[in-house]
Length: 177
Image (cartoon, rainbow, N blue to C red):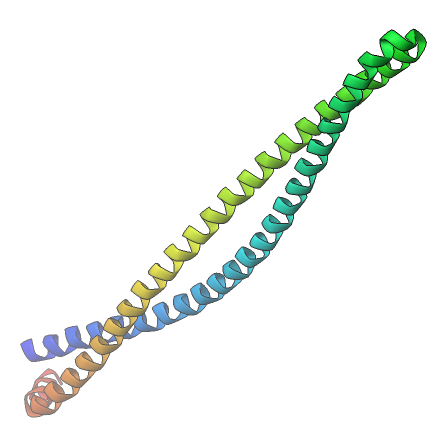
């Protein structure tokens, strides 16, 4: 009876190892697909970030040019005050309008910098997640190999023991009938 119980336990271990192997194989396939999709998203994110950085750089350059032009216009308007007071009033009103547009440009550039920084952080998090996923896939693959080896070993052990104990097992079944 002990031999029969041993064979049943080995059979259960074999089935468990085989099930683990099949389950891990399925999970590895799904994980590989997710990592491929994640890498594609990372590439798209890098392109979007590069475009955003280019737009930000262009905006900063335009703002810098506007500021230098505004500074030149402001100094010229003060010279006009002495020459023609009516023209100076018009120039000062224009200065105020340009000044408010430059302030709005400063806000847009600051918002753009924040968006670029958030994009860089999100991209970094995505890369870390991909790295963690690859590490987990490697671990799952090692566990799958261990389950496969275990299934083969216990299946072979089951066959060897069943052949060796064949006569004893036949006698157990004859007694029970």
